[in-house]
Length: 373
Ligand code: 8DG
Ligand code: MN
Ligand code: MN
Image 1 (cartoon, rainbow, N blue to C red):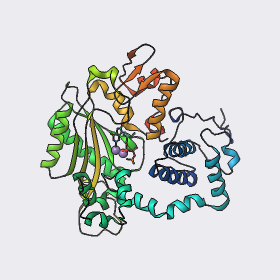
Image 2: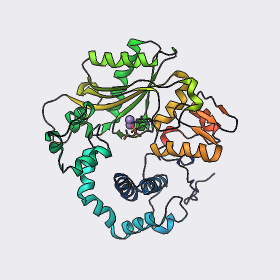
Image 3: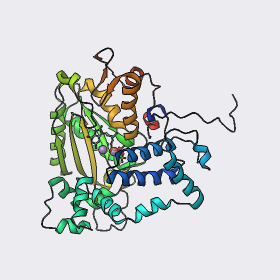
Image 4: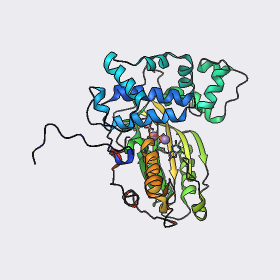
């Protein structure tokens, strides 16, 4: 059939898991503003307003063209009066004065700066701000502040970690980890997940899922991997979380964000010579170093939980949130990174692939590249 010059606007679902969202965002002027508002509400612990702006941003990311007038948003879900007023201001004046005010706000700027340190969350940032700290140097030099080891590593590598990771850098790390894992076990399986699996060109870290068909050997594989990275001299930091996953407790598990699989949050050293096209040039950095530090997450689910873990770690966060909400509200099912509980049948539904999970939920399959909600 002939392509229509004006394809009809597809009706968008209020669930991110029923929308197709590529990495191409045609409405960045609005979504950037919404993200600032969401973050500001998050810093003030106004969770419902925060979520409202995150949802609105997520909906606009799936609109395949730039919106030219607020009327075009009338048929879109999750866009309330406040979000539409912000859009109207941006369309009329090129910016929103509410957003500009937040960006100039001292507290917002400080909380942004402090939470940019690996290991510093909104609570710690707030405490530092209320204690009168205004620069990173203040936090490092204040004798009353006891930094934990994660925060120490965060400060030490702050400049490198604040710089985004390129796809070429992510691929290079994948090669290094894959080779290292295969050196430990010929059966090791390593896959890229997170934003890079969704096709993003840049990320704040690199996420991997590691597993093995040898039952019960996942965590030891991860520990051996970390040990090998240490011996190669490329491990700069490791925060290991031991597995608390127990298949016998499955019906009792609470369906929360943080999962129970063994995982390590790492900082690794990546050399210029290991990356095709070289490392990303860090602005203003010319200290003669031939390497940069990169944040890497590795999670190791048992093989029979692989599909659930892969779906959970691929993201985006908004896509995951709505998959769970859809399962609960529309199917009376509980979904998390470990499994899918059918509350009508009172049983766990098994899955070997992500496709199986979408099918259990009665959802059309959405490939990772279209989960950038
Ligand atoms: P980015 O790094 O490119 O900025 O984006 P991302 O890859 O989408 O975000 P991420 O923060 O690296 O998280 C990737 C996915 O991992 C996301 O959908 C949430 C999921 N995830 C869990 N459990 C945990 C956890 O315990 N910690 C973290 N950091 N992420 C987790 O399912
Ligand atoms: Mn990531
Ligand atoms: Mn991550």
